[in-house]
Image (cartoon, rainbow, N blue to C red; front, top):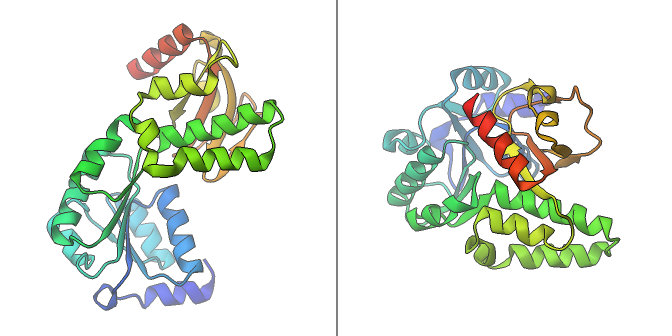
Length: 262
């Protein structure tokens, strides 16, 4: 953060906010939202439940407070009634549902955007009051689709048009499918292998995952807006990475069962 921004943030006062964005969670997604907000001079405030993150980011000058965004008093402190938008970018699904419900009750007009890991959770978040729900699982499928189309030398404009169509109508088409059906629809008649992904929740080396043991192939790492291919065996992963891999259905099932047990 440059000195001008740092100075600006240190002078930040929650009470002066209006038409601002509330960023819930300050992981990679939250940080990207903050950068984008600064680029467009949009006022924002951050709330996070990790005291270390709050302490460090506050020292850097970010407008951040410690608290649980599903708590009514915390939302009031964030001036929820004056806010224009709230972006919930945490990985705790139960907390996200509670936050959506509380935000909607305190400000019926606020625009609520939520990140969730799984397509199966989309409907409940909409029913609770979210305006837009972005499932990571679906976005991973989109990225995998582009890789498949690259293999078939499809025109980039054609790929973008197809992706736009897939994303249209707020995922209505794919919200009616299970995650397994989404993945099958992308790979049907193209390969006998399934594609899948896992979400990294702690800093670790990719070699700590038993991909080789289950005959699985890592095809890419999705980090922020970047897709990393040709992943080395000793690649260092970080929180919020998505590992995309291929394998036969039985091996994938056994692999996922093994990492859940560990």
